[in-house]
Structure formats: structure tokens, C-alpha cells
Amino acid sequence: METKNLNSGGQLNLLLATQNVKATCEWVRAALQKEPIEFTQPFAEESRIEIYFDSRLEAEIALKALPPELPIQTAETKECKEQDWATFWQHHFQIMELGQNLRIVPEWEKAPEDRKINIIINPGLSFGTGGHFTTQFCLEALEEAIQTLKPTTLIDAGTGSGILSIAAIKLGIPKVDAFDYDPVCIDQCTANAARNSIDGAINFFQADVLEPGWYSEPADLVCANILTSVLLEAAPLIKRATKKRMLLSGIREIEADAVADTFVQLGCREISRDGDGKWCGLVIDV
Image (cartoon, rainbow, N blue to C red; front, side, top):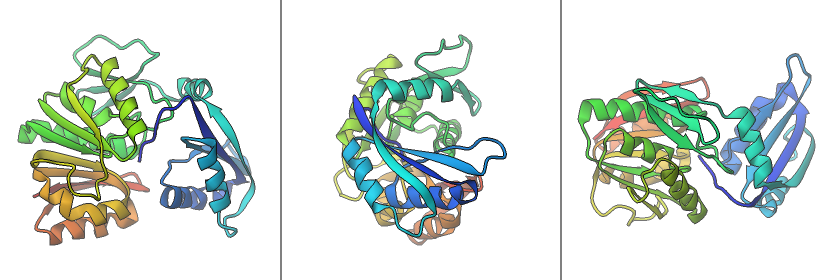
């Protein structure tokens, strides 16, 4: 669900009627596996959607992949400089309080000094800020699991910006392994860990959740904030990698039953679920 940090990326800009935004955003998430950013003024008849990629070439490929049935008025790509992306986030990414003890703080903001746990993040070309429901769900479910299960190990599958793994270490889990499919993501995770003064505390590495070998032994907790299609295919591996509990997200609400049923058929038990009307998260015990 969460992408990368590069000196130069690509941006795909779409202009369309406001009434068509929801359907278009759903297509982007399902087909491009990206989280679109919507800009709509109050009472406006037209909206703009921005989608960010690791390179201009990827944005061009996505442009050509747009199906003709999508009601898009104009579509164009452009290069996205890191400083442009940083300026965007400084306007749209602010301090967020999550759960009972967590606070997400942009690197450019001064972290409040109190009893809450500050997680310092610079998103770069990344959506791993805690602003998306799926990330919020995983962070809050992680905090609850730590309080109730007292886990000592965590595997973070599809770590993105590393925000969940950083939170796990700061909440007291001593051993955290975190991986992502793209090695560029791992560089961003390592940098974010350093921002939180926990250099080397997390084992970040590149791996594919669909391929065996991303765990040497099961962990008490496994978090997988990835798309439904990948969750369904990787379900047997995720289950075998888990001793106690799975925190699953990146799921559209209409797909939640299918994901839950898949894990139940593997002998697991659904503990809880939550959603925001579009996205959903599941807590599953083995």
C-alpha cells in the first residue's frame, strides 16, 4: 500500500467530473496499486486526482493503461522532484494522535514532549504517514495486541515507510523483521528508523510475501498491510508465519468477508474488524 523515496519521481494528473472521482479512485487502487490524492473544491463540478510513481516512465505506463471507459477529461504526466513532493507533504501531513499512546510527527515539526510515543516520519515519495485508514488501523491494532498478548516478535510484511515497525520497537517489541518488495522502500525505512534513534533495531530486508523464505521462524504477530488479491494468495504463508495474531489491512470493505473466510478456512479465528466505509482491517488469531 505504501511507496518510496527517490530524487525524482513521476506524477500522473487526472481532471474529471467530481461525480466520477470515487469510481476512478477505486480503479487506481485496484489496477495501479497506488493511493490517489484527490483535490476537490467545495461545490466544484470538476476535481483533480494526482497519482505518484517512482519514475516518470511508470507514470507514462499508467497513463497508457487508463481504460477508455473511465470518464477522464484530461490526463497528463510530469516529472516530480523530491523537493516538490516534500513541499506538498509539509502542507498536508500534520501531527496526528493515534490510539492511546502514539503520535505521528512529520520530521519538519517539533515533537511535543510528554508521555506519548513520538514516531518521526519523513514520507519522501511515500504514503506511510499514518493518514490512511489502513495504516491507522494497523497502528491501533498493534498497540492493543501489545497490551493484551505481550508479544516479543513481529513480522511486518509490506512495511512501506517502516512506520509500523518503528512503532512496534517504541512500544516495546524487542525483535522486529520488516520487508518490502521494492529495495528502494528499504532505504526509506532505514532512514526513518534513524530519525527515531533506533538505527539497527529493525531487520529491514527485501522480499516478496508470495515467495517462501521471508521468515525463518514464526513471529508472535504478523502485520500485512497489502492488497486483497495478494493477501488471499499469500494466506497460507502468512498463517504459517504467525504464532498468535495477524493484523491484516489494505482490504476494501466489500472484500473483507472474502479475506476473513480464507483465513477461517485455514483454521484461524476472526477477532475483530473495522472500516471507514471504503477500507477495512481485520484482526485474526491463529
